[in-house]
Length: 462
Image 1: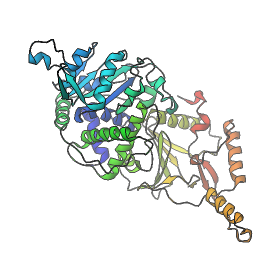
Image 2 (image 1 turned 180 degrees about the horizontal axis):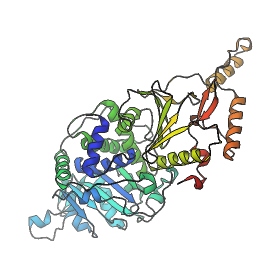
Image 3 (image 1 turned 45 degrees about the horizontal axis):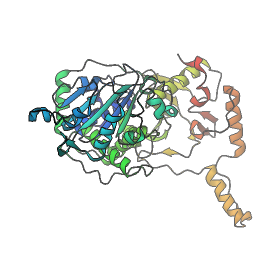
Image 4 (image 1 turned 180 degrees about the vertical axis):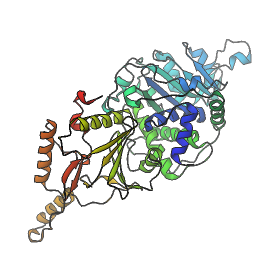
């Protein structure tokens, strides 16, 4: 079964109607990871009615405990004053999975208990017996800040009305993931009614996988993360793999892509942004959104979109990966149609699924050197930066009579392109973003992406 088929099957099981941005399904899979993976904690935040709790509310079997009332330390560790063993062993820390709803006001004393548990996964049961815990936690709370770009992914904005205890760095750094639920980020979603029988069966199969371990000793995680962060990313990766593949092991490129998304969600808990769209994840992403890599010549990655150049066709597809990308696609599509006199835009010939995919003509070479092939390698390309570095090195070595012929893009050409963009869009860009531009010997240049030049022109949004 292909990656896209696996994701579509999960879509159907959890009641989401495809096609949707990739971030929606990855968010749902991360939310299910604590069901399959022991000793992991995640935090869900976002606007009301954005589906934070719906998956857990549908999993009504005994392994999952949903708590929405205030809790005490005695409930967490067990109360030594209880008389029967059954009462004593009702400690929350002795459970498998606990969902803490409406948790935004949890006090410092309770958060301190969780910080201790998430450090060692042991606790003093009934104040008498040191006990190992396999608890997986999900903390859920509403936050009302508008998140409209990746620059808004800060703790103060994501957890705007959470208690100071919940925003404590020592607590957040122990969360394997922070999953934002904001309509602008996730984009528009349509839901079917969940089939209880199918979803219940799926959930129970995930619970049965909790003892199952996956060898992830060889995965590569960005070195910007410390050892504790890498451990949490590894745990989250294991949980995601179980949700997607149950007890099977996926191909290495799929694991690489999952690691990048696990890194993205964990970085949010640290108040940082890790772009999951990179050379390590690209084959997984292509299989997830495009279905195959067989007809792909190369891709160009943006923060919220992936441009896919089709093999042997003068056509590219711009896939939105999240709601921000959908907004960018719609802005470009609407602007292009309302401004037919701007000839420097490469024609957009189709808007598919209301901004999820744009079809655009592609008759040139990308100006950027950061184009990536389907194996995830950056394609070697002679660029102006390379030429300039060669010339500088040769001049410094006194080799002024043997300078090579120029084979990149001259500064005067870049200046003229910038001038044309400023003129056509009524803007004043200071730096040229080469990933937006295509060059052709026949037609000069055209813009393959131009959201940066129109993002403040709200009138172009339908």
